[in-house]
Length: 206
Image 1 (cartoon, helix red, strand yellow):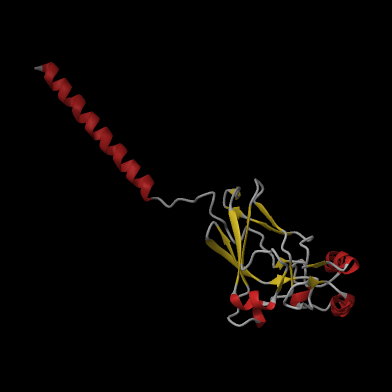
Image 2 (cartoon, one colour):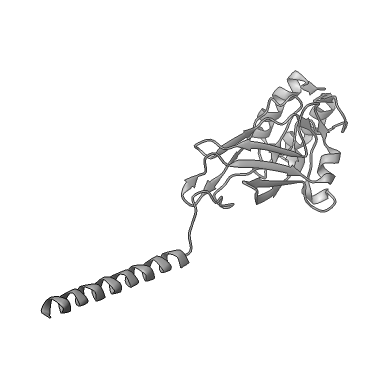
């Protein structure tokens, strides 16, 4: 009789223990989860798109989540119809969607063969480029380029007229969206360093 009572008690304890585990499991499932692969706009660095005929200037974004840089993420730039139509695209450059993949540091590098400036503030609809990470929208940006005077049709090229347009803003540090090539909300020496090789080499593409 004592043996049967002992077995009964053991079974009861096992049932109680399993129920307790079940409650714990349910609590874990119900708790909010933070995924390392979810980008955080506040931690990520996504400047305005930098493009140039020939694609010799790299445009770089850094995608970061709460647990650090996100590796192997697909970063897609989607140009609005309004922006796509006012830019000059080199032959062979895919658009209006362009995709690159992040490395272990969360960095995705684009070499965009195009020219022209797309300032969201003056574009119908107010959207120039939407940036998606793994199909999730992260940010809206514009596009800048040393080829500010663009023909909208290939061949795209950086010429003397572009250099002339940049001269006054660079010399006087006068801000203008299209002249801020590094997206630091200022126009100055850094922008000149980016633009000068394009002017000197008269970059072009078909």
